Length: 226
Image 1: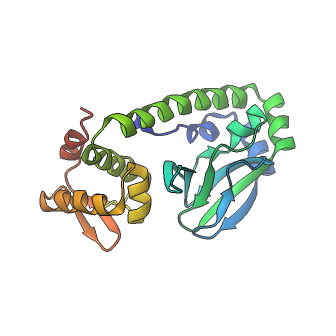
Image 2: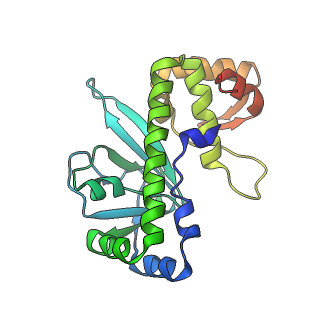
């Protein structure tokens, strides 16, 4: 179910031939970003693409009232910013680090060079881009057709997948309440009421900003995505 709402560029590096992967890793330049630091902003022109080494980044657009609508959360292993490079257009959204992150940068020149040299990279990128369009369509359908309760449940499930760490029994979602509200397309006050209901029903537990999902199958039912 969650695959319908997550990009799949995390598979690109793993599926590349070793020589192409080595070339790509050699041209990456790492940069540290602090929490709340922008990576790029809407309407600016791209100078390259990005790859998440660690941390998390939110991708959002501003609505007519000046509120953020968070479209997606990137985490380690994902490429981003390449659709604007491929379409030779300005960025259609803004990306900001939501925790301290290390992000690799690949210049347009190097990006175009590996596109020409590696048919595998071109194919995987095209496959990833096609999947992104269907993910965005699914997310837009959720925002327009689902209740707030359903949207919050679904976004908690998506975030659980994002914050899950291998070999650790517990997963804690560390997103701010305002960002979670902006993901679910609601206001913080309404989100607080829904989370309170979920906590009362023992679907989740909270500790400060930390959220842990206790009954995933039940939340899948609440999200109405069986």
